[in-house]
Length: 240
Image 1: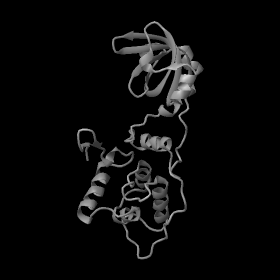
Image 2 (image 1 turned 90 degrees about the vertical axis):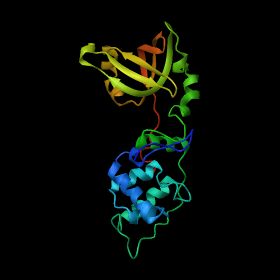
Image 3 (image 1 turned 135 degrees about the vertical axis):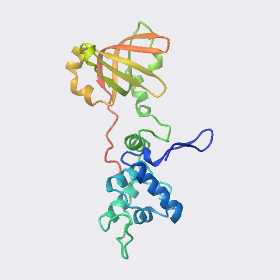
Image 4 (image 1 turned 30 degrees about the vertical axis):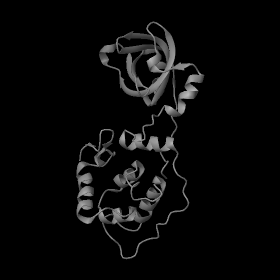
């Protein structure tokens, strides 16, 4: 149950990477595949593996059934799982089962797939970044990439919020690390700015900020003067 290099360019993620799937559950899935053969379908997996319902849902959203779903449609896999789950418990093969043929379901967009990957695994095999869908719009409003920040100059920029810190010894200052795929910077947020945007800063997954940059070698900080949330979209129910 670990990361495995398939070749010099490919790393296979373990099932335990999926949120809510324990190492024990991942091992059970692999052991059943080894002894009973490859899973033929979503229904076949459900009948052979006794696993918690929430873990099943997350596996479907994460794309774990793409290899056994002819359409590779996560909505379809999610629908089939819920149809069967209403009839019997996982790991119990029924004599008569419900017809799980799904209705016509549209495929998820690349952005929706990316969001589900990040939500369920924290990583996406697609190589896409959450900011990719917004880069043109960010350029239009004058944002420069994080790599484009220059020492002593003010600029607008944007990034995903990677970490947040507001240590008691910092006299009310907060420190956010932003990244845009290839670079990271530390955004310094004053106590006044924190108080003015407390809820936004608590919940935002990405920020647009404006301030003066300090560049010291590879360490880059920006003292934020103004900020705004960068909405990434909400596809939490994309597989429904």
